[in-house]
Length: 446
Image (cartoon, rainbow, N blue to C red):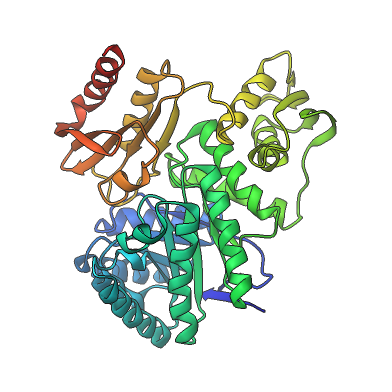
């Protein structure tokens, strides 16, 4: 069995190398100045790889300009071109970046033509030393694979294996794979299946881990830690991105924590744990609330996902921002984190479940503000799954689990979905949240 590594610029991924931390710009790639400035900040904050959206062939010149400007500033962090649907754009940009992220199954509706275009991309990347990330997302699988296996973790893994098979046949191994979902159960199951399939074929490619559309705040961090840590603890995963609906700088500390913990550079602040039946009581002596949140999520996320435990009680202390010791149980923090952890592992829902993408250069409205407004006005809808998506590219597919969806169209317009069906199109973003709440309220009163 061959344990493979990939190279993006000077960064090695997999093959026993340290876990790589990455993030993605949310600027418009056509705004070269803003994108360069954000890349500089992200590199300084610790990003070891930065992804840019490249929506169309016309954006390739912008990518070249960004790369040139960064080189002039001494910023050598590898740049990843994020491509959706357009194989032409992927082929054009590949010579100018260190890595290209694509979903080959969406290159063409005709599967044979999609394979032809992927074969062309492999040769361009081989010529220029460019890595490929095969990025399969739950909800945006091609029709060819869903017709065979449905929209399932197995389908995600099977889809990845087809494209990896082409890479193996072409003797092209500078490849990373991802299988992302906003559902932690689906995400973990898909990666486990893929890891098993790769071992079975004798070639283990590096894996990029992430819980896509995780949301923001504590919930986004906990959900990301639950999914990613469950896999890293099993030795599955080589590079991570924590996708938060916040400024991308905010993603890096969580990803760095995960990398450090599973590269065995830090340990949990848990001081003791006792288990009675399927209930665990854990005590912590944590240096901060943020550390406590991540420690708890990594200590118990996998055990809840795998249904080894049914209940967690969290006790002990942490230091607040002023260095004052806080009692975890007495302050209510223990109950709150337990509830959040149960929801992230999809064991028990105590509030609405939100799916929200982090935003990128395709987003044409104030995604973060809209998401906060949606949460504020729907917080009473326990158990309802609501998606807030930046654009039409991933929106309808990636919110496959949602009861309701709020998806950007561009030009400050939004489409509102009920399930997978658009029920209101071309709504101004200044009015869309109210329209969404009205539709949910009307539906519940029927």
